[in-house]
Image (cartoon, rainbow, N blue to C red; front, side, top):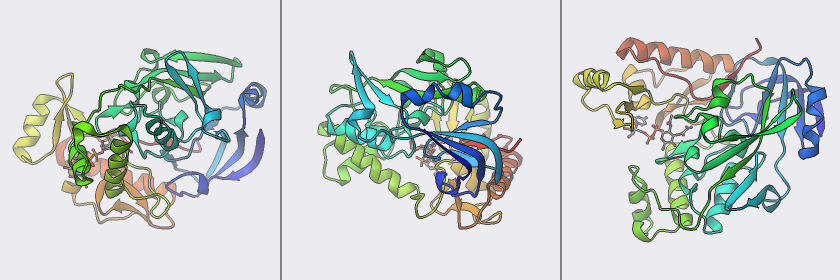
Length: 343
Ligand code: EPU
């Protein structure tokens, strides 16, 4: 374990927002967890940080203790077999896990290729893309409760997964560090190619969708993502900044009367998901900036840092978006990333 007082977090969040925390604790192995009980006693500002790809540091000076789990030295050290499950360490990189899985001929997470972040962050917002969500393959999550000093396993149902949501996100003040995930990765998982663009992306590479391997699907999805999402190393961002709102059939009919072209998708419960990016474009805000916080020119759902943006700039722009969309159609957009504030 290593402890850094007054650590700089600017390089530890993909929006590259300037921030500093009271101390950063880097954990290297499972024996380190036990020390957290003592270290965090009476600490009311604790933030667990993975690769910082879905976190917005709104304030620059944070009173927090930030906990970071270092990835294991090799992939194989971070992956264990438990009956028919693969148990993965929270510190592993998610995109490397997907690559490892498809290279082994194991299916289940190939549609979630190239999503940045640590494995431990994946359940927090139930990562999802191209018709698959983490909850579809997750068996259980192990957490370390630093107040009790105990490990605990939560079943898939106990995690209360929902679209970009979970118990971990709804109740962020629980003294939990996600330490491991158990996934069902199997050589006979059926391919899921129903999402617009996936079959076309395979065909563009000369691959017949019926005969695609998991690795080929992952590769096609990686190319699709690269065409829509900016690389944080060249244009800092946190992926989709807002959730796509889910509305009633009645509300959808009213909106379609106003905007017949609004993209919408029926959900299992009869409600409809509508495109937040499309609504944001309708507000005409897309060329605006607050400080150096702005929109990605190819995708209105992605807020970016054009250079020197602060968390306050990003939060200011997000507020403008929420107000404008509300005024245009009565929908209140919800932010997707986790926000960390000084108070
Ligand atoms: N659209 C616009 N304007 C834009 C971009 C998109 O009108 O600037 C419309 C298009 O009509 C398009 C529709 O929005 O058909 C949906 O766009 P896209 O397929 O790019 O998906 P998304 O809703 O923007 C969601 C997830 C992404 C995920 C993709 C693919 C959310 C909040 N975002 O984006 O997840 O990769 O689908 O499955 O659900 C993330 O969570 O960070 C993320 C990147």
